Image (cartoon, rainbow, N blue to C red; front, top):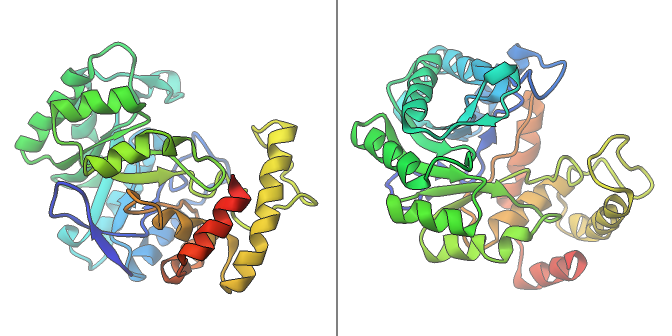
Length: 306
């Protein structure tokens, strides 16, 4: 495993982490096996991953509870793991879709997360989603106070546009931004990613495999049965995927590992957090760390993707 330092901190994170939205995330995914989910986390740790990402809304707290159970069942010391979670989306009505960034809510949400994960602190705590009402200065200000109290070690934000990110970063030191980014969704390259690189904010992409289209299973001839993409966008995306197969073959890797390695090669991206629900899935992405992309490779990929 390779490691880097979370910006504005002394926290060392593995460049390949794991996303735990499918570990207990019953409100988003069906037919989840909780024992398999816990084994997914244990296998990642066994393979050298120390960076685990979750949120209180995943399973309305169940993901955090399962992570807490794993922390209590393994020999790895708590201080050797970097746990990231998020707050700011409520469980109102069981949907987990309503945002609340009020300081008192964020403090309460963090306390509940700590209890579920059976830990005294969170290494990286994200404001999950802006609520459009609470000034970011108030929300981030509260996270700064929680940091001073030792309950969080670093402050992150998620799903912010450039202006919101600037506002947050003026209030307190932001160490990480989490936002959607992949070979098939490069919108953050316009302004958000360059800002992160310039202002020492670790960019952590979510949906690095673009909802599975970059997992290697799908092609123009074999598209997914269900997708939120329109027919034309899906077709164009899969055409790019098919063209990338020549590079996958040349690098003797997999489509997923190529997609993750490409992200890690982008300026500002410090780690990737692919999700999964079974141990074999985490084993399948570990090879991304060994994929070497030359400048020529990156130009070829860019020509395909543009």
